[in-house]
Amino acid sequence: MKTLILGAGIVLFLVVGLAIFARVKPLPSERFSGFSGPNTPGKHLLDGGVKYVLPLADLPKNALAKLTEIIKASPRSTPHETLKGRAFVTRSKAFGFPDITLLWEQDGQLHIHAHLVIGKSDLGVNAARVDGWLEQLLDQP
Image (cartoon, rainbow, N blue to C red; front, side):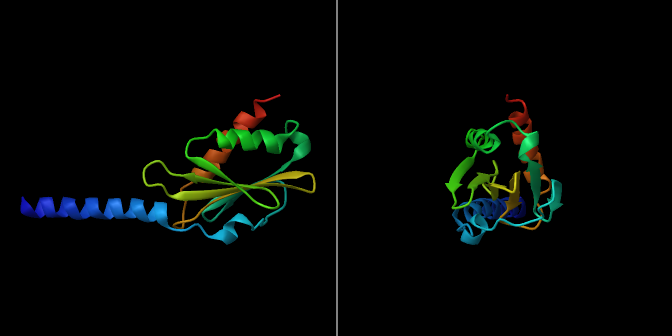
């Protein structure tokens, strides 16, 4: 019985420690200014995230502004302005793991790059989140 209680205590300590680490670890500033490729139209699954390149002609008018408002209204998403575009940090519900999403327009296309900060795989969370935002955007006039 003591071993079970000790084991549960250790697991609880590790879980709480991980949650605290995820929330206090400084976000890398270079992740807010790097507008990386690929730059060809489409949905590009990447290690730890996803990159969308969407022709503005295929999107509602003022797509960047509308998408920005959609993201601002999303749970656990905080905006961070950048020089060339917009950046957001969305934290996971359970542990507060941060994911960074960058938005910018370039050469008549809307770029959306969503990626994790901690770990190696986001298990498709960023793609699913951005897919939901794009569904909301496309439902608008």
